[in-house]
Amino acid sequence: MSYADTERKYAFEVYPKRDLTLVRGEGATVWDDTGRAYIDCTAGVGVANVGHANPQVAEAIAEQAKTLATCAGIFYNDVRARLLEKLVAISPASLTRAFLCNSGTESMEAAIKFARHASGKSEFVCAMRGFHGRSMGALSATFKYRDQFEPLLPGFSFVPFNNIDKLRDAVGDGTAAVVLEPVQGEGGVRPADPDYMSAVQALCTERGVLFIVDEIQTGLCRTGSMFASDRYAISPDILCLAKALGGGVPIGAVLTSERVAPAVGMHGSTFGGNPLACAAALATIDYMQEHTLDRRARELGDYFAERFREKQPARVRELRQIGLMIGIELKEKATPYLVALMEEGVLALSAGPTVIRLLPPLTVGRDQLDVVIDKLLKVLSA
Ligand SMILES: Cc1ncc(COP(=O)(O)O)c(C=O)c1O
Image 1 (cartoon, rainbow, N blue to C red):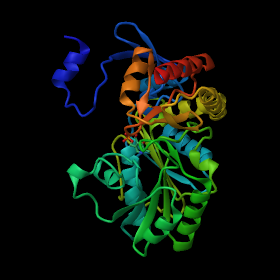
Image 2 (cartoon, rainbow, N blue to C red):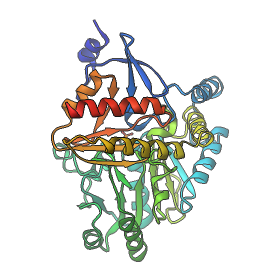
Image 3 (tube, rainbow, N blue to C red):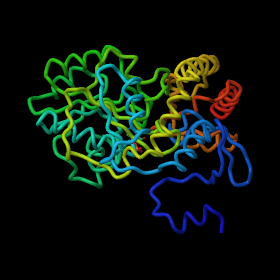
Image 4 (cartoon, helix red, strand yellow):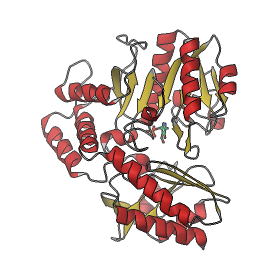
């Protein structure tokens, strides 16, 4: 039986699968079980920012696995302490503490609890097309994928993204927090307008409402700065992080301002803050800083956009590019083009029915990006 057949037989399948079995990766290249190479513009859905099998991260994981892989949160730990310090150092100035967990949805789950605890309120205003995860709390803040699972948490409302008047109308006396992605990822790679974000910040400050920023997809150099929040005049109270943080090892984090005070017993996680994931995250952030991946994402993303726009095929409605977070909105369904790209040796994602999304490792070579552009132009012009 092939690996695909084995998965088909035994998996509790929840994913629309592609007919491809990946077995190895290096940098921005992945290989299937027949030895064919692909340029990976999925990066594990925005995880492998430092490249697949990054040697610095692999070394750190191996060393830590031989030293201490697990350490409950009731004890202090050397590696965890170093990661907490590093996270606060690189994050927006308003954020001074971090809670460590294991995934994006867990980080949003914790953010919702922390905001309710800090504010004493239970309502959240979120954005249409927003995506924050699939556990019941995070799903309550998510615009799609909810129908089959209601009732979800009460008190969540949705307003159009980038519309400050609608947000102002929605924020009330019971509002604990406003929840936004700086660039909506799953929702189609849609960046927030700088004026909108400034107005959201002003509104939150004026009404005493917490501002939760979901940087799970945008964080850690993806958009050309360490955090997408750095591009805006905002001081978030809570910032959620996961995906790229562990260089492939599962880890999430919730960064909080002093307004969001912790209390012993309010939350916990067996694996949260385990030294193995912390060592991977420290090595990942070190690599990003040593190789200035923020600048690299900015430069390569701008290069991509310039070259793509020169010959933009007629079936493209719009290119939206922020660093190496790229959305190509088509005038038709994206899936056939994702399949055609795969046949050409390029793996890409969708973001809604008509958007091709590219999230390559930020270590991708300019020559590899040239191939991606050529293949995109080829399949989109066919
Ligand atoms: C913005 C955003 N928030 C939350 C999540 C959920 O993260 P996870 O899949 O790690 O639970 C995602 C995942 O795609 C995301 O893009």
